[in-house]
Image (cartoon, rainbow, N blue to C red; front, side):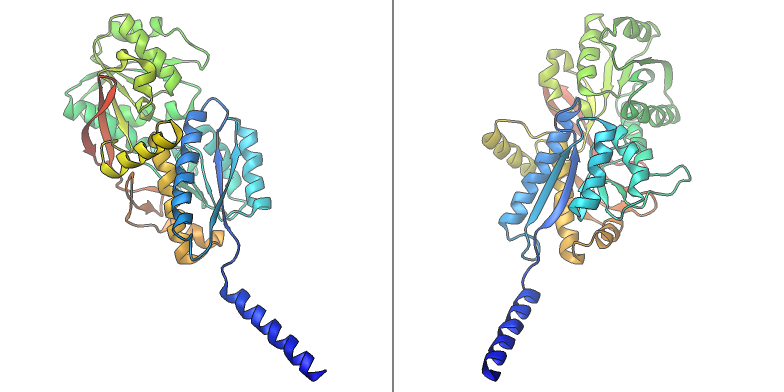
Length: 379
């Protein structure tokens, strides 16, 4: 009897030691993106980039011997869908972190709710309201992993005025879209500080498709440039109609003029100046674009690389502090000098936004992106 008891004790101790020394289960990361809605071209690219990085990480052995598993929820570009999915990830799926969307309306809706949970959200919605409260302090769990609207607007304005010599601007924007609106004041403020004038501003509704009357109003004001911080489908129509009415001046656009916009818009896109997180001619980025194209038949756009970098960052910090969401949040808040494909990434603990992250100004030439200059974010 004693012998049997001893053998059972040895077995139990062996199993206990093996369990304590073995890796735990999968590390679970949430991904909250629009997969089937009106901004699905953005959300699917973030998901694809994160998944590409995940596959690289797992193929190399995972994080401290553990695999990463990503759970994606489709927001369908609907705020309530996003809120429901966010809550499920925090309460049911027990994720260590969430890769958030590049869509301001969704981010703004999630931000106050995120205060109820201890799960960090690493997202790309550039509106300050996604990361910052009205009192100027950051939401504890919301983080932005590209330059904010304030920073991007300032970059575009400074480049347009100081590098291109443009002085008279008209603006056309979607007044119901948080992304479009968030880029207005930063651009206007920086342009005026650089010595330029804002001659006319024309808002439009999300349902508008005929912009010719609005564009004629802008052109007749005597502008030499039109600033159009709008989503891709609207931007295609605005660009084509601006050229159709004979406007030969400069069009300045945000991230939505990145590929695949030039191919979708056609030759009317030539000459547009726009901002991007990456330049497609860098060797590592070029290599991933080519491999992704070969495997899927699709093009990897800038949102792909945002998702890629954030998944790599999560693997790094979880490898250092473990997968407890509170520890992950603290590590993300204090991230410094991470060299990603979208630049050298540091998070400012005072804002939960990137600090000093460069962006790349491009011009569309023969419907292809031509890099003009890396531009530092004004501090």
